[in-house]
Image 1 (cartoon, rainbow, N blue to C red):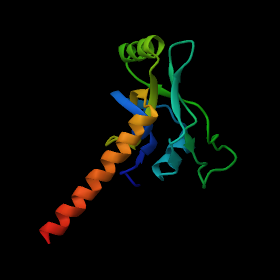
Image 2 (image 1 turned 90 degrees about the vertical axis):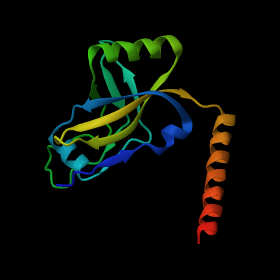
Image 3 (image 1 turned 180 degrees about the vertical axis):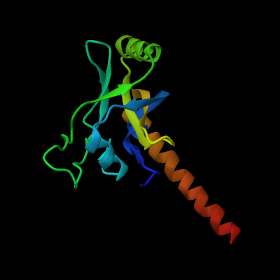
Image 4 (image 1 turned 45 degrees about the vertical axis):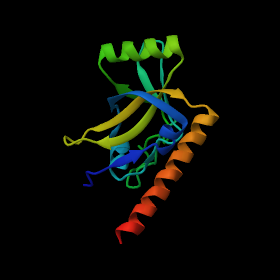
Amino acid sequence: MQQNINIKNKRARFDYEILDTYTAGIVLGGTEIKSLRLGKASISQSFCEFNDKGELFVVNMQIDEYSHASHFNHAPKATRKLLLNKRELKKLQKEVATTGLTIVPLKVFINDRGLAKMNIGLARGKKLYDKRETIKSRDNKRNLDRIKKSFNN
């Protein structure tokens, strides 16, 4: 069994400014966790939202169907419940409702006990000029590293 599952949402840090992060458990069925352990998942288009009962769900998370399952397989893009403490849920719900922030999934991993976890972030959307700044600073860092490497040789 492969333990180092680490599925990241690379667009989240580019599109959003992450203000706070939380680690939440995910409610999964049998074929979902088996497929996730094989690394067959994607969270690039997903987001989190609350229902009327105050429960947090991840929407648009893609977990491919398990290849060795029969007709009891799961739906690939089903909404899946996230597990957090009550006070964390209330704090997140208040932040989303009052200030207009959003909750984005950052990373899905399997912890040392074999449970599926998701890092979620309370985020504010970046403007276009912020994204340009991010691209410019990344390019400058890459060029600086290239120059340092040429001087060290």
